Length: 404
Ligand code: CTP
Image: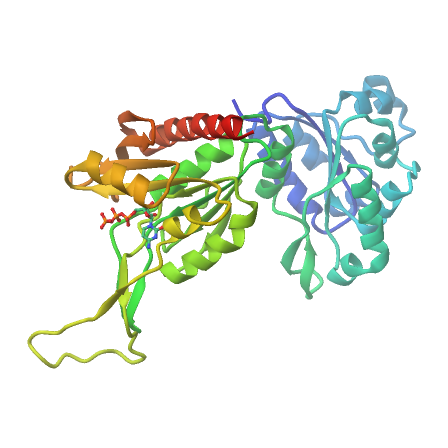
């Protein structure tokens, strides 16, 4: 079941060109199982017709406060009571100001001061209007009252300018709403995950890398998000679509991965290093393409920074989970890595077996911690990621209890 299944979403639409995206937003919300009722301001109806939203929401659209017919079916008070969440998307600068000062001169603003449901807004406006001190002050007032502001995003605007002021995309808004209703053991926890390979340049056209697809790390990121966490994924070059709800930080080589990880570590509760970081990089990277000369060529390599060990050896490290890919002596190698790198847990997989591990759909893991271990038998990376995240939550909570 999705987080938004059967949730009653009152969608307010105000007069911005971004209103055309609200039609898609209604579809996306309904795809997640939400019930949607739409309230439009008079200006919004100049940008998109109520008929479109009626067809998409399957419900009558409300616009006027003094509408005898609408009041007979579902009056404005009932609508305010019906809502489990109010999302005003797009919210114009004018609407934010009205909401900040409690005006009630149309149906949407009246509903907003009547409802007890959480109110959320997705601003959309010209970037100068967004930056204007008065708009920022209004937003601050709204936030102080617990109103959540989703976005706006940066980018090119309908007016031809570039800057912050674009309404978030419908799918992003769906994720924001899901975040409001999310329950799970990792709510209010920050999880940082590395995934995929890294590339270490030899010259402008060649590099050292490995066969990691990033799928395991991506599956763990989705599982952690589903458990309620705020998830950041630092990944090397992969060709995967970003998992829903996860913040992506793409990097190229081991050094960049280390830097990205270290910027997030101060706020991280659990760090999971699923990346197949290249262990070595060329000491020198040629600035021009290397030409073939001798029959034998030697490349001098140096160790890359060990990101996992760097994190685990910090004075106040997060709960740290590593991976080990082994072709032989899995138990011994995994246990010694657990100890040597000072990890809380290590998930080891046997590589070199057809169909599991690197660049494949399935995986099997043997997970170790100081006092014990468990085998997670072969299944899809999605299933194994869910089991691994459950295990991480158990061990993490135990460690927290013991240290408090
Ligand atoms: N790791 C890392 N930074 C590196 C190398 C590895 O963060 N420069 C992390 C990986 O993400 C993984 C774990 O460390 O979680 C793997 O440990 P590693 O010592 O590299 O094991 P193997 O790659 O299996 O290499 P080896 O067996 O040669 O020690």
